[in-house]
Length: 508
Image (spheres, rainbow, N blue to C red):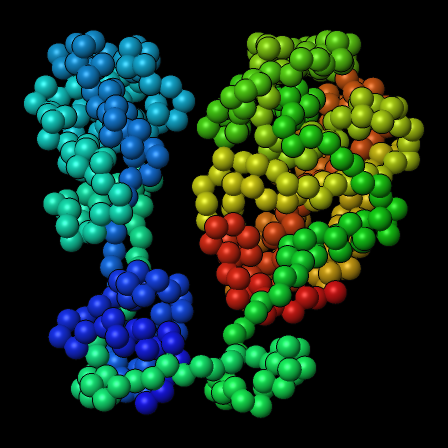
Protein backbone atom coordinates (compact mmCIF):
# COMPACT_ATOMS: atom_id res chain seq x y z
CA UNK A 1 0.00 0.00 0.00
CA UNK A 2 1.20 3.46 -0.88
CA UNK A 3 0.11 6.52 1.12
CA UNK A 4 1.15 10.19 1.31
CA UNK A 5 4.00 10.93 3.70
CA UNK A 6 1.87 12.64 6.33
CA UNK A 7 -0.54 9.69 6.48
CA UNK A 8 2.34 7.24 6.82
CA UNK A 9 3.79 9.33 9.66
CA UNK A 10 0.45 9.27 11.50
CA UNK A 11 0.03 5.50 11.08
CA UNK A 12 3.55 4.77 12.29
CA UNK A 13 3.05 7.00 15.37
CA UNK A 14 -0.49 6.01 16.41
CA UNK A 15 -1.26 2.91 18.49
CA UNK A 16 -3.84 0.15 18.22
CA UNK A 17 -3.95 -0.31 21.98
CA UNK A 18 -4.20 3.28 23.23
CA UNK A 19 -5.95 6.36 21.83
CA UNK A 20 -3.56 9.18 20.89
CA UNK A 21 -4.65 12.80 20.60
CA UNK A 22 -4.08 14.81 17.44
CA UNK A 23 -1.87 17.23 19.39
CA UNK A 24 0.29 14.35 20.61
CA UNK A 25 0.58 12.99 17.06
CA UNK A 26 1.51 16.46 15.79
CA UNK A 27 4.24 16.77 18.44
CA UNK A 28 5.61 13.29 17.70
CA UNK A 29 5.60 13.68 13.90
CA UNK A 30 6.66 17.35 13.97
CA UNK A 31 3.80 18.12 11.60
CA UNK A 32 1.36 21.04 12.01
CA UNK A 33 -1.83 20.01 13.92
CA UNK A 34 -4.00 20.98 10.94
CA UNK A 35 -1.94 18.71 8.65
CA UNK A 36 -2.30 15.83 11.09
CA UNK A 37 -6.05 16.47 11.39
CA UNK A 38 -6.46 16.29 7.61
CA UNK A 39 -4.41 13.09 7.43
CA UNK A 40 -6.45 11.52 10.24
CA UNK A 41 -9.75 12.14 8.47
CA UNK A 42 -8.36 10.76 5.22
CA UNK A 43 -7.14 7.63 7.04
CA UNK A 44 -10.54 7.29 8.70
CA UNK A 45 -12.17 7.29 5.25
CA UNK A 46 -9.81 4.46 4.27
CA UNK A 47 -10.79 2.47 7.36
CA UNK A 48 -7.26 2.61 8.77
CA UNK A 49 -7.98 4.58 11.96
CA UNK A 50 -10.90 5.15 14.31
CA UNK A 51 -11.46 8.71 15.50
CA UNK A 52 -13.23 9.68 18.72
CA UNK A 53 -14.12 13.19 19.88
CA UNK A 54 -14.78 14.78 23.24
CA UNK A 55 -15.19 18.35 24.47
CA UNK A 56 -12.89 19.43 27.30
CA UNK A 57 -13.81 22.45 29.43
CA UNK A 58 -11.16 24.48 31.23
CA UNK A 59 -11.37 27.52 33.51
CA UNK A 60 -8.94 30.37 34.11
CA UNK A 61 -9.07 33.64 36.03
CA UNK A 62 -9.42 36.93 34.18
CA UNK A 63 -7.07 39.82 34.96
CA UNK A 64 -9.65 41.20 37.37
CA UNK A 65 -10.00 37.80 39.03
CA UNK A 66 -6.21 37.55 39.51
CA UNK A 67 -6.19 41.05 40.98
CA UNK A 68 -8.76 40.03 43.62
CA UNK A 69 -6.96 36.74 44.23
CA UNK A 70 -3.78 38.64 45.08
CA UNK A 71 -5.57 41.25 47.20
CA UNK A 72 -9.13 40.47 48.28
CA UNK A 73 -12.69 40.81 47.01
CA UNK A 74 -14.22 44.31 47.38
CA UNK A 75 -17.08 43.04 49.54
CA UNK A 76 -14.59 41.57 52.01
CA UNK A 77 -12.75 44.91 52.17
CA UNK A 78 -16.07 46.61 52.83
CA UNK A 79 -16.96 44.10 55.56
CA UNK A 80 -13.62 44.52 57.30
CA UNK A 81 -14.00 48.32 57.20
CA UNK A 82 -17.55 48.00 58.58
CA UNK A 83 -16.33 45.88 61.49
CA UNK A 84 -13.56 48.39 62.18
CA UNK A 85 -16.17 51.18 62.24
CA UNK A 86 -18.32 49.30 64.75
CA UNK A 87 -21.13 48.40 62.33
CA UNK A 88 -21.48 45.02 64.05
CA UNK A 89 -23.03 46.88 66.98
CA UNK A 90 -24.85 49.89 65.46
CA UNK A 91 -25.53 51.07 61.89
CA UNK A 92 -22.79 53.28 60.48
CA UNK A 93 -22.91 55.80 57.63
CA UNK A 94 -22.22 54.03 54.35
CA UNK A 95 -20.00 56.90 53.17
CA UNK A 96 -17.84 56.60 56.29
CA UNK A 97 -17.33 52.87 55.76
CA UNK A 98 -16.61 53.22 52.04
CA UNK A 99 -14.06 55.92 52.76
CA UNK A 100 -12.34 53.76 55.37
CA UNK A 101 -12.31 50.72 53.06
CA UNK A 102 -10.13 52.44 50.45
CA UNK A 103 -12.46 51.29 47.66
CA UNK A 104 -12.81 53.57 44.65
CA UNK A 105 -14.69 53.75 41.35
CA UNK A 106 -16.38 50.58 40.15
CA UNK A 107 -15.05 48.61 43.14
CA UNK A 108 -17.55 50.47 45.35
CA UNK A 109 -20.53 49.32 43.28
CA UNK A 110 -19.14 45.76 43.16
CA UNK A 111 -18.77 45.69 46.95
CA UNK A 112 -22.24 47.07 47.57
CA UNK A 113 -23.93 44.66 45.16
CA UNK A 114 -22.30 41.59 46.76
CA UNK A 115 -22.20 42.63 50.42
CA UNK A 116 -25.77 41.71 51.37
CA UNK A 117 -25.92 38.80 48.90
CA UNK A 118 -23.20 37.02 50.82
CA UNK A 119 -24.67 37.76 54.25
CA UNK A 120 -21.96 40.15 55.39
CA UNK A 121 -24.59 42.60 56.58
CA UNK A 122 -27.37 44.95 55.53
CA UNK A 123 -27.32 48.25 53.62
CA UNK A 124 -30.37 50.42 54.18
CA UNK A 125 -31.13 54.15 53.89
CA UNK A 126 -27.49 55.12 53.53
CA UNK A 127 -26.36 53.10 56.55
CA UNK A 128 -24.55 49.80 56.79
CA UNK A 129 -24.49 47.04 59.39
CA UNK A 130 -22.10 44.11 59.70
CA UNK A 131 -22.97 40.59 60.79
CA UNK A 132 -20.42 39.68 63.49
CA UNK A 133 -20.85 35.98 62.67
CA UNK A 134 -19.91 36.34 59.00
CA UNK A 135 -16.63 34.64 58.11
CA UNK A 136 -14.66 35.95 55.09
CA UNK A 137 -12.35 32.94 55.43
CA UNK A 138 -15.30 30.76 54.42
CA UNK A 139 -16.17 32.88 51.36
CA UNK A 140 -16.43 30.26 48.60
CA UNK A 141 -15.74 32.77 45.83
CA UNK A 142 -12.61 34.13 47.51
CA UNK A 143 -11.37 30.59 48.18
CA UNK A 144 -12.03 29.62 44.55
CA UNK A 145 -9.99 32.61 43.33
CA UNK A 146 -7.12 31.57 45.59
CA UNK A 147 -7.28 27.99 44.31
CA UNK A 148 -7.13 29.11 40.68
CA UNK A 149 -4.58 31.90 41.12
CA UNK A 150 -1.56 29.79 40.13
CA UNK A 151 -3.31 27.63 37.54
CA UNK A 152 -3.74 28.33 33.83
CA UNK A 153 -6.55 26.63 31.92
CA UNK A 154 -7.42 24.11 34.63
CA UNK A 155 -9.80 21.30 33.55
CA UNK A 156 -13.15 21.78 35.25
CA UNK A 157 -13.13 18.19 36.47
CA UNK A 158 -9.78 18.69 38.20
CA UNK A 159 -10.74 21.65 40.40
CA UNK A 160 -12.49 21.17 43.71
CA UNK A 161 -14.97 24.05 43.21
CA UNK A 162 -18.73 23.63 43.03
CA UNK A 163 -20.58 24.54 39.85
CA UNK A 164 -22.59 27.37 41.44
CA UNK A 165 -19.43 29.14 42.57
CA UNK A 166 -17.87 28.79 39.11
CA UNK A 167 -21.07 30.18 37.54
CA UNK A 168 -21.08 33.15 39.92
CA UNK A 169 -17.43 33.96 39.24
CA UNK A 170 -18.12 33.79 35.51
CA UNK A 171 -21.10 36.17 35.85
CA UNK A 172 -18.88 38.60 37.73
CA UNK A 173 -16.29 38.49 34.96
CA UNK A 174 -13.65 37.00 37.27
CA UNK A 175 -13.40 33.68 35.47
CA UNK A 176 -13.43 32.49 31.87
CA UNK A 177 -14.50 29.09 30.58
CA UNK A 178 -12.96 27.62 27.45
CA UNK A 179 -14.26 24.62 25.51
CA UNK A 180 -12.02 22.69 23.12
CA UNK A 181 -12.67 19.64 20.97
CA UNK A 182 -10.14 16.85 21.52
CA UNK A 183 -9.81 14.20 18.79
CA UNK A 184 -8.13 10.91 19.61
CA UNK A 185 -6.93 8.31 17.10
CA UNK A 186 -6.68 4.51 17.35
CA UNK A 187 -5.34 2.15 14.67
CA UNK A 188 -7.80 -0.37 13.24
CA UNK A 189 -7.02 -4.04 12.56
CA UNK A 190 -6.70 -3.21 8.86
CA UNK A 191 -4.03 -0.62 9.66
CA UNK A 192 -2.08 -3.12 11.78
CA UNK A 193 -2.22 -5.65 8.94
CA UNK A 194 -1.04 -3.12 6.35
CA UNK A 195 1.76 -1.90 8.61
CA UNK A 196 2.99 -5.47 9.06
CA UNK A 197 2.88 -5.97 5.29
CA UNK A 198 4.72 -2.71 4.76
CA UNK A 199 3.45 0.70 3.68
CA UNK A 200 5.37 2.77 1.16
CA UNK A 201 5.43 6.53 1.01
CA UNK A 202 3.89 7.76 -2.20
CA UNK A 203 5.62 10.76 -3.73
CA UNK A 204 2.72 12.87 -4.90
CA UNK A 205 2.52 16.37 -6.34
CA UNK A 206 -0.24 18.68 -5.24
CA UNK A 207 -0.16 21.16 -8.12
CA UNK A 208 1.31 21.69 -11.56
CA UNK A 209 4.15 24.21 -11.60
CA UNK A 210 5.94 25.92 -14.51
CA UNK A 211 9.07 23.93 -13.60
CA UNK A 212 7.22 20.59 -13.94
CA UNK A 213 5.88 21.62 -17.33
CA UNK A 214 9.14 22.96 -18.81
CA UNK A 215 11.25 20.05 -17.54
CA UNK A 216 8.76 17.40 -18.60
CA UNK A 217 8.77 15.83 -15.13
CA UNK A 218 4.99 16.09 -15.00
CA UNK A 219 4.81 12.93 -17.09
CA UNK A 220 6.52 10.81 -14.42
CA UNK A 221 5.14 12.16 -11.14
CA UNK A 222 2.00 10.97 -9.34
CA UNK A 223 -0.53 13.70 -8.67
CA UNK A 224 -2.53 13.83 -5.45
CA UNK A 225 -6.17 12.86 -5.77
CA UNK A 226 -8.79 15.52 -5.29
CA UNK A 227 -12.41 15.00 -4.34
CA UNK A 228 -14.12 17.25 -6.86
CA UNK A 229 -17.50 16.56 -5.21
CA UNK A 230 -16.44 17.92 -1.81
CA UNK A 231 -18.09 21.12 -0.61
CA UNK A 232 -15.92 24.15 -1.09
CA UNK A 233 -15.09 26.26 1.93
CA UNK A 234 -17.50 29.16 2.28
CA UNK A 235 -16.04 32.64 2.47
CA UNK A 236 -18.20 35.51 3.70
CA UNK A 237 -17.30 38.76 2.02
CA UNK A 238 -17.47 42.01 3.97
CA UNK A 239 -20.08 44.65 3.28
CA UNK A 240 -21.35 47.87 4.77
CA UNK A 241 -23.38 47.24 7.94
CA UNK A 242 -27.11 47.71 7.47
CA UNK A 243 -27.11 50.32 10.25
CA UNK A 244 -24.46 52.34 8.44
CA UNK A 245 -26.32 51.95 5.15
CA UNK A 246 -29.48 53.33 6.75
CA UNK A 247 -27.53 56.17 8.40
CA UNK A 248 -26.16 57.21 5.00
CA UNK A 249 -29.64 57.06 3.54
CA UNK A 250 -30.97 59.26 6.38
CA UNK A 251 -28.25 61.78 5.59
CA UNK A 252 -29.21 61.75 1.90
CA UNK A 253 -32.88 62.35 2.77
CA UNK A 254 -32.15 65.24 5.13
CA UNK A 255 -29.70 66.88 2.71
CA UNK A 256 -32.44 66.54 0.08
CA UNK A 257 -34.77 68.38 2.46
CA UNK A 258 -32.34 71.32 2.67
CA UNK A 259 -30.39 70.44 5.84
CA UNK A 260 -26.65 70.78 6.52
CA UNK A 261 -24.70 68.32 8.67
CA UNK A 262 -23.28 69.15 12.12
CA UNK A 263 -20.10 67.70 13.62
CA UNK A 264 -18.73 67.81 17.14
CA UNK A 265 -17.06 65.95 20.03
CA UNK A 266 -18.32 62.68 21.50
CA UNK A 267 -16.89 63.77 24.86
CA UNK A 268 -18.14 67.17 25.94
CA UNK A 269 -18.74 69.36 28.97
CA UNK A 270 -22.00 69.01 30.86
CA UNK A 271 -22.42 72.70 30.04
CA UNK A 272 -23.01 71.93 26.35
CA UNK A 273 -24.78 68.62 26.98
CA UNK A 274 -27.25 69.77 29.64
CA UNK A 275 -26.82 73.28 31.06
CA UNK A 276 -27.39 75.02 27.73
CA UNK A 277 -30.56 72.96 27.37
CA UNK A 278 -31.98 74.54 30.55
CA UNK A 279 -31.63 71.15 32.24
CA UNK A 280 -31.41 71.73 36.03
CA UNK A 281 -28.20 70.51 37.62
CA UNK A 282 -30.14 68.41 40.15
CA UNK A 283 -32.09 66.61 37.43
CA UNK A 284 -31.94 62.80 38.02
CA UNK A 285 -30.67 62.15 34.48
CA UNK A 286 -27.53 64.16 35.31
CA UNK A 287 -26.41 61.89 38.15
CA UNK A 288 -23.46 59.53 37.80
CA UNK A 289 -25.93 56.63 37.54
CA UNK A 290 -27.19 57.79 34.13
CA UNK A 291 -24.04 59.16 32.50
CA UNK A 292 -20.55 58.01 31.57
CA UNK A 293 -18.10 60.45 33.15
CA UNK A 294 -14.40 60.64 32.27
CA UNK A 295 -11.71 59.65 34.72
CA UNK A 296 -8.99 61.64 32.95
CA UNK A 297 -9.40 64.49 32.14
CA UNK A 298 -12.39 65.22 34.34
CA UNK A 299 -13.19 68.82 33.31
CA UNK A 300 -13.02 71.05 30.26
CA UNK A 301 -10.51 73.90 30.39
CA UNK A 302 -12.36 76.69 28.60
CA UNK A 303 -15.95 77.81 28.21
CA UNK A 304 -17.21 81.13 26.78
CA UNK A 305 -17.52 83.34 29.89
CA UNK A 306 -20.39 85.52 28.66
CA UNK A 307 -22.44 82.48 27.67
CA UNK A 308 -21.73 80.79 31.02
CA UNK A 309 -23.03 83.89 32.83
CA UNK A 310 -26.19 84.02 30.71
CA UNK A 311 -26.92 80.31 31.16
CA UNK A 312 -26.36 80.54 34.92
CA UNK A 313 -28.71 83.52 35.13
CA UNK A 314 -31.39 81.65 33.14
CA UNK A 315 -31.16 78.70 35.55
CA UNK A 316 -31.30 80.85 38.67
CA UNK A 317 -33.67 83.67 37.62
CA UNK A 318 -35.36 82.57 34.41
CA UNK A 319 -35.75 84.63 31.23
CA UNK A 320 -38.13 87.52 30.55
CA UNK A 321 -40.43 89.41 32.93
CA UNK A 322 -42.35 86.24 33.86
CA UNK A 323 -39.29 83.99 34.11
CA UNK A 324 -38.89 81.93 37.25
CA UNK A 325 -35.82 79.78 36.74
CA UNK A 326 -35.20 76.85 39.05
CA UNK A 327 -34.22 78.74 42.23
CA UNK A 328 -31.65 75.98 42.81
CA UNK A 329 -27.84 76.08 43.11
CA UNK A 330 -25.83 76.27 39.90
CA UNK A 331 -22.17 75.25 39.99
CA UNK A 332 -19.81 76.16 37.16
CA UNK A 333 -17.41 73.38 38.17
CA UNK A 334 -20.27 70.90 37.75
CA UNK A 335 -20.98 72.39 34.30
CA UNK A 336 -17.34 71.91 33.28
CA UNK A 337 -17.40 68.17 34.06
CA UNK A 338 -16.66 65.98 31.01
CA UNK A 339 -18.80 63.03 29.97
CA UNK A 340 -19.76 61.00 26.94
CA UNK A 341 -22.67 62.88 25.37
CA UNK A 342 -26.08 61.42 26.21
CA UNK A 343 -27.62 63.10 23.16
CA UNK A 344 -26.38 64.99 20.12
CA UNK A 345 -28.27 68.10 21.23
CA UNK A 346 -24.87 69.15 22.57
CA UNK A 347 -23.99 69.77 18.90
CA UNK A 348 -27.14 71.87 18.50
CA UNK A 349 -26.23 74.11 21.46
CA UNK A 350 -22.72 74.60 20.10
CA UNK A 351 -24.05 75.59 16.66
CA UNK A 352 -26.94 77.75 17.90
CA UNK A 353 -24.65 79.67 20.24
CA UNK A 354 -22.32 80.53 17.37
CA UNK A 355 -19.43 78.85 19.19
CA UNK A 356 -18.89 76.19 16.51
CA UNK A 357 -19.12 78.01 13.14
CA UNK A 358 -20.06 81.59 14.03
CA UNK A 359 -23.40 83.37 14.34
CA UNK A 360 -26.25 81.98 12.24
CA UNK A 361 -29.00 84.05 10.69
CA UNK A 362 -32.42 82.47 10.06
CA UNK A 363 -33.56 80.50 8.25
CA UNK A 364 -31.22 77.58 9.01
CA UNK A 365 -31.58 73.79 8.94
CA UNK A 366 -29.01 71.46 10.53
CA UNK A 367 -28.82 67.73 11.38
CA UNK A 368 -26.47 65.03 12.61
CA UNK A 369 -26.56 61.23 12.63
CA UNK A 370 -24.11 60.37 15.39
CA UNK A 371 -23.55 57.99 18.29
CA UNK A 372 -24.68 58.80 21.83
CA UNK A 373 -24.06 57.04 25.14
CA UNK A 374 -26.44 56.34 28.02
CA UNK A 375 -26.22 54.16 31.12
CA UNK A 376 -29.49 52.38 30.34
CA UNK A 377 -30.62 48.87 31.18
CA UNK A 378 -30.09 46.62 28.18
CA UNK A 379 -33.29 45.30 26.62
CA UNK A 380 -34.72 44.78 23.10
CA UNK A 381 -35.09 48.55 22.56
CA UNK A 382 -32.21 50.00 24.63
CA UNK A 383 -28.42 49.82 24.34
CA UNK A 384 -25.62 51.63 26.14
CA UNK A 385 -24.69 53.33 22.87
CA UNK A 386 -26.83 54.00 19.85
CA UNK A 387 -27.27 56.41 16.95
CA UNK A 388 -29.41 59.53 17.25
CA UNK A 389 -30.84 61.50 14.34
CA UNK A 390 -30.60 65.08 15.61
CA UNK A 391 -32.15 67.97 13.71
CA UNK A 392 -33.37 71.52 14.10
CA UNK A 393 -34.83 74.33 12.06
CA UNK A 394 -34.33 78.02 12.91
CA UNK A 395 -36.96 80.33 11.40
CA UNK A 396 -39.59 82.92 12.24
CA UNK A 397 -43.08 81.89 13.40
CA UNK A 398 -42.58 78.12 13.55
CA UNK A 399 -45.39 75.97 14.91
CA UNK A 400 -46.05 72.38 15.93
CA UNK A 401 -47.71 71.86 12.54
CA UNK A 402 -44.38 72.69 10.86
CA UNK A 403 -42.66 70.13 13.08
CA UNK A 404 -45.24 67.40 12.43
CA UNK A 405 -45.15 68.09 8.71
CA UNK A 406 -41.36 67.71 8.71
CA UNK A 407 -41.65 64.29 10.35
CA UNK A 408 -44.35 63.13 7.94
CA UNK A 409 -42.18 64.13 5.00
CA UNK A 410 -39.03 62.52 6.49
CA UNK A 411 -40.59 59.18 7.43
CA UNK A 412 -42.53 58.92 4.17
CA UNK A 413 -39.14 58.62 2.44
CA UNK A 414 -38.77 55.28 4.24
CA UNK A 415 -42.26 54.02 3.51
CA UNK A 416 -43.57 54.88 7.02
CA UNK A 417 -46.85 56.78 6.93
CA UNK A 418 -48.56 55.95 10.24
CA UNK A 419 -46.62 58.21 12.63
CA UNK A 420 -48.46 59.04 15.86
CA UNK A 421 -47.74 61.92 18.26
CA UNK A 422 -48.09 62.06 22.04
CA UNK A 423 -47.67 65.17 24.25
CA UNK A 424 -44.59 65.02 26.45
CA UNK A 425 -42.51 67.10 28.88
CA UNK A 426 -38.92 68.19 28.28
CA UNK A 427 -37.02 70.81 30.31
CA UNK A 428 -35.82 72.41 27.07
CA UNK A 429 -38.86 72.34 24.73
CA UNK A 430 -42.42 73.61 25.02
CA UNK A 431 -44.63 72.34 23.51
CA UNK A 432 -43.07 68.86 23.30
CA UNK A 433 -44.21 65.51 21.93
CA UNK A 434 -42.95 61.98 21.36
CA UNK A 435 -43.24 60.09 18.08
CA UNK A 436 -44.48 56.52 17.71
CA UNK A 437 -44.61 54.10 14.80
CA UNK A 438 -46.31 50.71 14.40
CA UNK A 439 -43.99 47.72 14.40
CA UNK A 440 -44.64 45.78 11.15
CA UNK A 441 -44.35 42.36 12.84
CA UNK A 442 -45.78 42.72 16.35
CA UNK A 443 -48.24 45.54 15.62
CA UNK A 444 -47.09 47.32 18.79
CA UNK A 445 -46.42 51.05 18.98
CA UNK A 446 -42.68 51.74 19.20
CA UNK A 447 -41.34 55.08 20.46
CA UNK A 448 -39.06 56.42 17.76
CA UNK A 449 -38.21 59.95 18.88
CA UNK A 450 -38.72 63.07 20.95
CA UNK A 451 -39.26 66.63 19.73
CA UNK A 452 -40.54 70.11 20.42
CA UNK A 453 -40.02 73.87 20.12
CA UNK A 454 -36.96 75.06 22.06
CA UNK A 455 -37.94 77.16 25.10
CA UNK A 456 -37.05 80.83 25.46
CA UNK A 457 -35.02 79.97 28.57
CA UNK A 458 -32.74 77.92 26.33
CA UNK A 459 -32.60 80.16 23.26
CA UNK A 460 -32.18 83.59 24.90
CA UNK A 461 -28.82 82.79 26.56
CA UNK A 462 -27.60 81.33 23.23
CA UNK A 463 -28.43 84.62 21.51
CA UNK A 464 -31.18 83.18 19.28
CA UNK A 465 -34.09 85.59 18.75
CA UNK A 466 -36.40 83.47 16.59
CA UNK A 467 -38.14 80.09 16.86
CA UNK A 468 -36.23 76.81 16.72
CA UNK A 469 -37.97 73.45 16.37
CA UNK A 470 -35.86 70.39 17.11
CA UNK A 471 -35.90 66.62 17.50
CA UNK A 472 -33.89 63.56 18.42
CA UNK A 473 -34.87 60.35 16.60
CA UNK A 474 -33.49 56.83 17.12
CA UNK A 475 -31.83 55.33 14.05
CA UNK A 476 -32.15 51.77 15.44
CA UNK A 477 -35.89 52.24 16.01
CA UNK A 478 -36.20 53.36 12.38
CA UNK A 479 -34.60 50.05 11.36
CA UNK A 480 -37.14 48.18 13.51
CA UNK A 481 -39.99 49.79 11.58
CA UNK A 482 -38.33 49.29 8.19
CA UNK A 483 -37.17 45.69 8.55
CA UNK A 484 -39.27 44.24 11.36
CA UNK A 485 -36.37 43.66 13.77
CA UNK A 486 -37.73 42.97 17.25
CA UNK A 487 -34.48 43.27 19.20
CA UNK A 488 -31.91 45.94 18.35
CA UNK A 489 -29.24 43.75 19.96
CA UNK A 490 -29.58 41.55 16.85
CA UNK A 491 -28.17 44.27 14.62
CA UNK A 492 -25.24 45.60 16.63
CA UNK A 493 -23.48 44.99 19.90
CA UNK A 494 -21.94 41.85 21.37
CA UNK A 495 -25.06 39.75 20.67
CA UNK A 496 -25.61 40.77 17.04
CA UNK A 497 -26.89 38.08 14.66
CA UNK A 498 -24.33 37.96 11.84
CA UNK A 499 -26.41 35.57 9.75
CA UNK A 500 -29.40 37.92 10.00
CA UNK A 501 -27.24 40.83 8.88
CA UNK A 502 -25.84 38.85 5.93
CA UNK A 503 -29.26 37.74 4.71
CA UNK A 504 -31.28 40.93 5.22
CA UNK A 505 -32.03 42.62 1.92
CA UNK A 506 -31.41 46.34 1.98
CA UNK A 507 -34.54 48.46 1.52
CA UNK A 508 -33.95 51.64 -0.45
